[in-house]
Image (tube, rainbow, N blue to C red):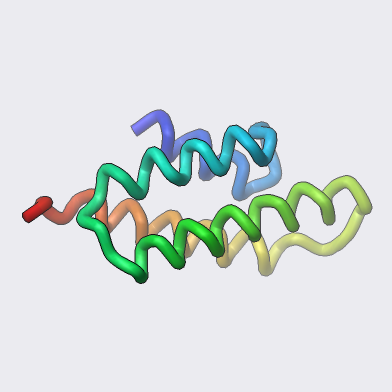
Length: 85
């Protein structure tokens, strides 16, 4: 899915502005079965993407944040594959 691809690029420090990323996260989580865990993953992902963007600008370390963001995206992708009830 294009949205997931765009978020993965942002998680790896390429591309999206944070407002675009947050919009795409909301779009993705709406496609999945509603759950508090998924909402929390979306919130954490948004925060991580913001921190990745800031640290990239400042020249800071981002590898752990990028790894966590990709883990969250994997979980969201798995939730999307589950059939809605």
